[in-house]
Image 1: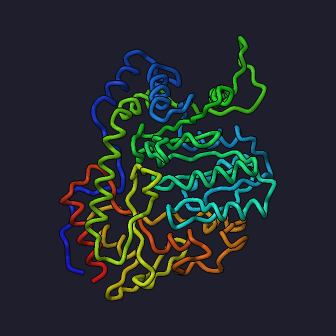
Image 2: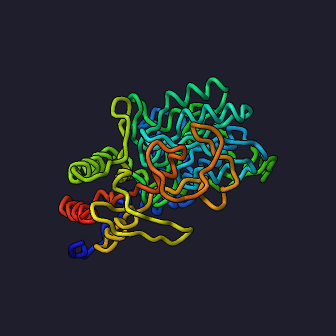
Amino acid sequence: MKEIKKFDQKVWLASPTMHGDEIKFVQEAYDTNWMSTVGANINEVEKLACEKTGSKYAVALASGTSALHLAVRLAGVKPGDKVFCSDMTFAATVNPVMYEGAIPVFIDTEYDTWNMDPKALEKAFEIYPEVKVVVLVHLYGVPGKIDEIKKICDKHNAIIVEDAAESLGATYKGKQTGTFGNYNCISFNGNKIITGSSGGMLLTDSLEAANKTRKWSTQSRENAPWYQHEEVGFNYRMSNVIAGVVRGQFPHLDEHIAQKKAIYERYKEGLKGLPVEMNPFDSKNSEPNYWLSCMIIKPEAMAKQVRGEQDYLYEKEKGKSSPQEILDAIAAINAEGRPIWKPMHMQPIYRMNPFITKNGNGRAQTNAYIAGDSCDVGMDIFNRGLCLPSDNKMTPEQQDVIIEVIRSCFE
């Protein structure tokens, strides 16, 4: 690979983009002394979230994870229950199921959107008909096969917890993600499409669920003159200071999405002719928020690559490449990429949990590379895919250099 000059300033995967109003609302919280978990900023971000998504109620919380935890509780998950979960996702999707002492059952991925496979979900209900909760993710801002999944869940009287942490602003058949489940969660973590540096939100059309969430997130205090507690609570409410940052970000959501889309399209055009594909979506029914641009190497162009738990090896092969080779090449010019989320069923902590593919219950015997119409789609995408630098402050010129680096890996 020919030498390419490093960037003086690092090009990030996805970093916060501030606009100025954020500090104004933070200062307002400071000046008015509303520095706790109540205040005008919190009220306003809940209102803005409802207006944007079409959800009836929103409860601002400390993180997307806390929103997911309370959603799992609202869904009635109890210790020992099995819960169907998207397999290819970040651990925060699944950990709240464990918080409640339940057992995640991982549902394999499909190639069309890289999300939960409806065929595998139907197979899972055949094996575990008692399951009543499904945790669904929209990976990298791309909506999953919502109609098919909802139809299956309705057939089996199952509740959907929708993890829309990565997909705020994405739509499916014109409707915003974060509104398809019984209980829905979004995130304002530092790398998300808009941010508060932290923070999250639970969205629901149920007033009862919204009120329970408010109560549970403030230590389950009863309506009494003293501190009265009749159930376990949590310190999960969003800070009015953090809410000030989110409040300043919300008006720029569509702008950020447009910038992310332009990045995706530039990669798609710039990588033409290479044996790679961009992360897919259903262009007929959905519009992603393009949070992260990802690519996957075609099976015939995969060079040899082996990953351990924390280390990896790969070989350079003419006309071929591997995700780790490309990630190393990107890092060498001071830019940040990332492997695809390692599927949950491959994680050491979850290796004994059930994993359901469209062909039934089972696990591959190795994490070595497999390709094509695999019986373990998540493993295949993890082995062949990677996340590209997708920061909306990246210039077209910087992106052109990254594209050149990727192309050089196949020489």
